[in-house]
Image 1 (tube, one colour):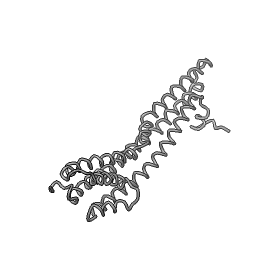
Image 2 (cartoon, helix red, strand yellow):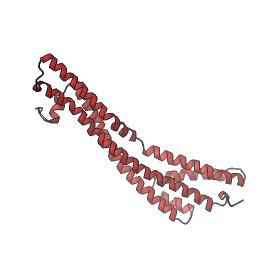
Image 3 (tube, rainbow, N blue to C red):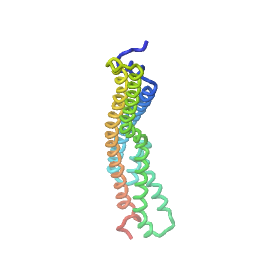
Image 4 (spheres, helix red, strand yellow):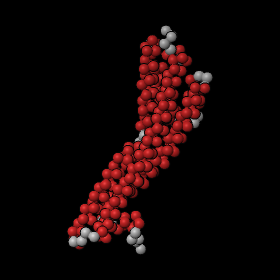
Length: 231
């Protein structure tokens, strides 16, 4: 038996247009919470891996051992960025060009590849975040649309019944206002989560950029033909 009172009763007793709006908002809420939980777990794990890997890299006695230390934690964001740079470094090392030319190319080449690696990781990590931003911005307006639609139907019913009594008007308006409330329920958590996830993502990006800088410094210090002090 369908309850006649309460939010659930109003939702189930609303007109088809209002129910469609409510259904869309519920789907948006479910998907946004799925993204929130998934991303919080992913970002915290990635932040921990990147922070630990960066520390291990700096503590290693040389570049080779630093890369091995980073790779021990498996296929992480830090190891992927490092492997991309190492691959380009090996290509340049084997290139049949004179040493001075290599020395001139190595830093710019590695800087470009490391930036590319960091950008790829940030793109991968930030996927689906745009949906949270969409929920935060669009959900209140979708809810408002449902409210307007419901109020239009309420006034139409008043016209048909030729009665403006509160008992006639109130149920339709209260049902319509539910969509605005649900829209805010979707938007507020999405807004808070979006900003929180952006802050976590910023911390990960900072560590990746620091790692890229440390990688470049070690190449210049430890690889003889890449050092600017060598001829």
